[in-house]
Length: 437
Image (cartoon, rainbow, N blue to C red):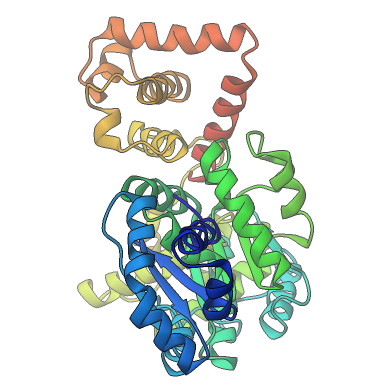
C-alpha cells in the first residue's frame, strides 16, 4: 500500500506533465493531503479561489492520476476550512470503546505488592505523555494490570472527554494487522493507532516473535512517542524476559518506567475480599475472609470470583454465610500450589495466539509451513506438559499416533540441534501457558 506522500508526489508529477509546473505551484501551493482512504484522496485548501479552481479544472486530471497509480477508479474530495475542521473533530471524538466505570483508582486495593505501579498509573493519568512514557506494567495474570489500564483511561476521559483513547490486546493487534493487509486497509489500521492520544496495549508479550507485527508496532510506538502521546503496556513478564522480542522494541519498552505487580500479601488479600464483598452488598465474617485469604494467595481475579460465587450460593440456596457452608461452596476453587496441569485446550489456545493461527485451522488438515510448525509445537507441548498418551493427543487433531510422534520428534530434533528460534518459541509459549494457570 502506498503512502499518501508518495501518491501525492506522483499526482503532482502527472499534473505538471499536462499543465505547467508554474500553474501547479500556483494552484496547489497551500494544498495538503488530509487522508488517502480506499484509493480516495482527500485534499485541504484554505483558499476559496484555489479550491474552486482545483474542483472545476483539476478533478479529472487527479482522478486519472489516481487511476494510473491504483489501477482502479478513485475519487477526489477537496475540503475547505469548515469541512476540514469537522473532519478533524470527527477524528478527535473519543473512541466507541467503553471502559468499565468500576475500574477506577478508588476501587483498586493498594498494598506493598502493587503500590509502585498504582502510583505510576495515577501520575500518568494526571499528566499523560509527560512522565513515565511509556509505562510498562508487568506481573502474573489476575493481579490488576488491566484494572490499572482502565483506571488510567477513565481518569483521562473525565479530564478530557475528547481524548482519543485506544485499547487493544497484543494478539488482537496482530489479528487486526493481518486483516488490514488482506483487505488493503493498512492506512486505516495505522491511522487508528498512530493518531491516539492514549494508547493502551494489554498482554503485549503476544507480539513477540511475529516479524510483521513487531515492525508495525515499532513505527506506531515511534510516532506516538515522538508526539508525546502516552503509551501504557502490560505484560506477564518484563521486556528482557521476552526472548523472541526484537532488541529495538525491548529498548523502547524500557525508555520510560517499568513497574511490577506481585501477588498480594495476606493483609492486602483481606482488604480485597472485604472491599469486593462491600461492593456486592455482602457481610462476610472475619473467619470466612481469613479462610479465603489463606487459601487463595496468588490471584486477585480468583479472589473476586470467589466472593461472587459466595453471593450466588447465598441467593440461590438461601445459605447462611458461616465458615462450614462457605468452605463447601467454594472448595472446588482451590488448587494445590504447583500441581496445576494445563489442559490441551489451553495449550492449543496459547500456541494459536503465538503463531496467529485459528484453532479450527490448527486442528484441521491445512499443511502450509506456518500452520504445520504451530501444529507440531502444540503436539510437542501437550506431550511435555500433560499426561496424555500419543493416541489421546492425536484425537485433539484428528490424527493417528504416528503423526503425533513424528511432530514431537521434529521439535525435539530442532531443540537438540540448537535451533535458537525453536528454543525461544518453546520458552515463550510455555511461559504464556504457565501464566494462565
